[in-house]
Length: 136
Image 1: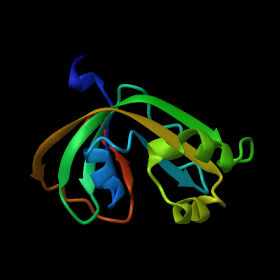
Image 2: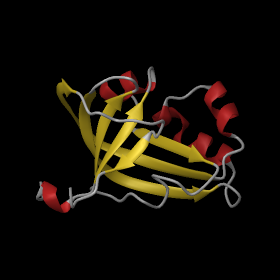
Image 3: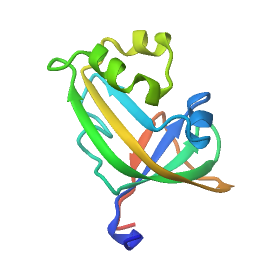
Image 4: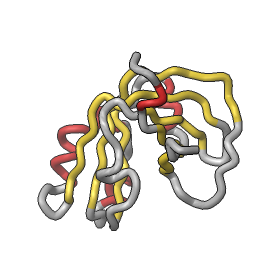
């Protein structure tokens, strides 16, 4: 594994049941849908590291991004994403219904997950994706 200092590190916030599916290896693709071009859309890359934080809880592990795919949903229908990636995403029909008015989609193919001894990160605000500055 290449030097961690050369990697971009992100903090992703996850909720159950998706968090459990991810940690158990059932969910192999994470997705983020947004109305605007906000993190992580066009701001993440293969080999970046994502810390896995439980919503209102601790960091439980991390994964390296194996592949990332960005979609402008005006150019591709969300049904195409559902058809191609639905089983890997492990989401419900309610999820798809909630995301149907999104403009952008980021699909993140998860490489092997490493579970860690849970630890706390003091995160404020409602953001569900944060990139750590390498300068810090």
